[in-house]
Image (tube, rainbow, N blue to C red; front, top):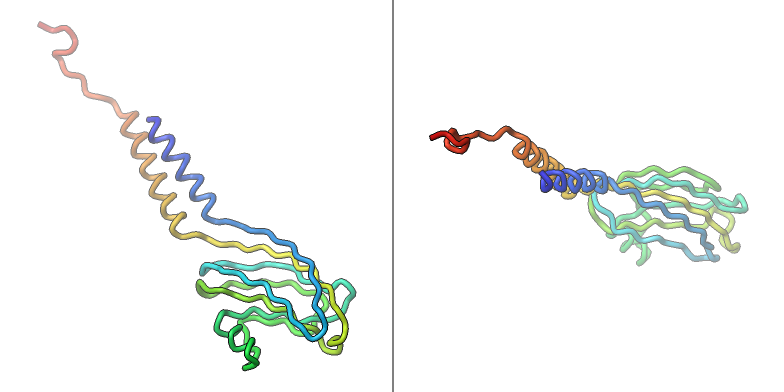
Length: 165
């Protein structure tokens, strides 16, 4: 019974913990003629939700690139991206990452502000379902229920054990 209860508790916690949310808040400067990047190694099924705001109301451009797109961007071969918001002073972001990869959140100066330092406030939440942990939790809960069932079932009594001759 005790093992069953332990497996049940461990399985429930594993299921709960498999859907993790990570909260981040960053404030940074976009220096003249530079870009700012945030690098994230993410699993597939991860989702990003956030708020971006340039503190003085100037516009910025926000891009999400995978590792291949960022490699091309670094050597000046384009700025294709999976997601983009161009020339906005404030925006909401919601994006689901298509596969496990290293992703780059890129911030660029907005049009007309290439000689000014811009200050960006970025609040974001990552939601990721860890499939292995989720399915492991289900297995642990199942084993816990089975152990508890076996511990509570009635036991057969043999006639010889009750003092019969």
